[in-house]
Amino acid sequence: MRFKDVFSIIGPSMVGPSSSHTAGAARLGRVARQLLGEAPARAEIVFYGSFADTYRGHGTDLAIVGGLLDWATDDLRIAQSLQHAEAAGLSVSIKAGKAVTAHPNTAKIMLGGATRTVELLGASIGGGNIEVHAVDGFDVKFIAMYPTLCVYHKDRPGMLAEMTAVLSRAGVNIGHMDVDRKGRNGEAMTVFEVDTPVAGELLAELGRLQDVSDVRLVDLEAGVGAT
Image (tube, rainbow, N blue to C red):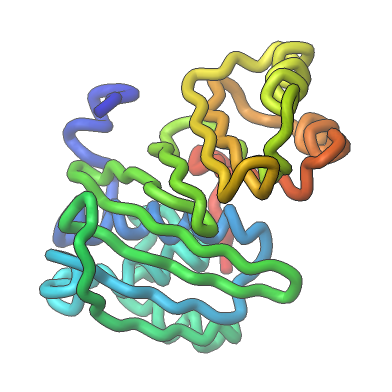
């Protein structure tokens, strides 16, 4: 486990009662919202393990929906997030699931918007910290403490070299990288956690690379929405 600073240990400013079950859950929701890249119209949330047993009492469902509305962990509106979601036209389905997961505080979030969909599997691991374990069926991992690029592309020779060259020319340092593919020469995803904010021009340049189909950015340090 990597800690960014002391606040990663003592937890963030938040609406209670639990950093794991509320603050971390809200961050998972924001990651899913940012990966979607637009206002969600429908959301299906499945809780596993401890989340499945306690989400009602701990407000985990409210926290994730608050994150889907792009709210910070300390936003007082989280307590009424379901009502706000309905007013915003966001249809929410919540259920408990049974599966063996890497962490007891695990949730799957499936979002759909006007033009995109995304599926995220992640866990709240304590102190408001999270780990993303999969995106759209790719087994890629990141912690969302740093600006994170998720690049959808074809698996082919030279693809990683071309992407890292784009980042290098822009002066962007890669702190962590993870890759998964659905088959040889098939669909793949590469995740880059980087040290500095990512400009729109860089996203566009990555998107113009041959065999890149999409680029999505997660940056929880960016300003939160007022939805």
